[in-house]
Image 1 (cartoon, rainbow, N blue to C red):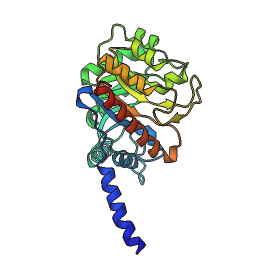
Image 2 (cartoon, one colour; image 1 turned 120 degrees about the vertical axis):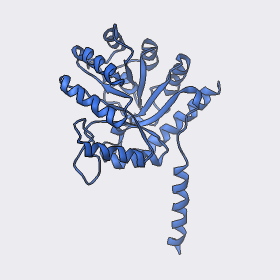
Image 3 (cartoon, rainbow, N blue to C red; image 1 turned 90 degrees about the vertical axis):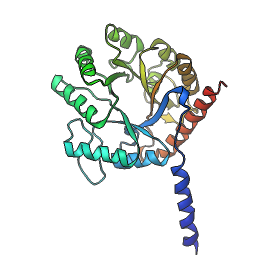
Image 4 (cartoon, helix red, strand yellow; image 1 turned 180 degrees about the vertical axis):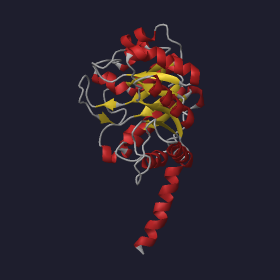
Length: 282
């Protein structure tokens, strides 16, 4: 009898989950998805199912994730046509759009072309990257050729693009096809105020990796649900609304790897509440 009662309960729960799509107010021009790296201990097939279960409609793919649990092929930019077709099928089946791909960089022009070819085939809008500074001209060239943007990403100090001033200096004279993917958590790890960074990068921001951390200025700081840490996610979103930012946000939760779907869902729901409040003028 208990089993008979549990089955309809689970059915109702599954319907409720399927109806919790994360939908932003249209006027903001914001899209919220997840970095597949959040679920790196799982295959892309499993990761997309997790994203779908909490209503996410967008994803940032990363190179090297197994495509299926049973297989060995990965999401590397060298993936075969057959493997790319499987990636696209999984995305379509889960009704999730691939917006970005990264963090990825090429060693030479041949690899950069392969990256852009992969992005074009999958339907990627921009490539998240940390290329050597002497390759930026090559990146800019391919961005224009393929009409796919590139977003410079920051890892913590002392990596190449850790500080906004460094990025801005390297973007001088570059086309608007190259912008910035600001990693909020890595700014916090580097002892930088995210709002100050965003103000400095105004006009060049394409996307964000969103992290809220439990402490400031410490490289080993770990993720916490958004709104409960020191990253001031609410303040970040308010500043972006003031700037008129139109772009993409990737949830990147790099903690409790085996069971981080609950805090990711809590975080995305927090983001949605703040976005709706901002949109209403409150």
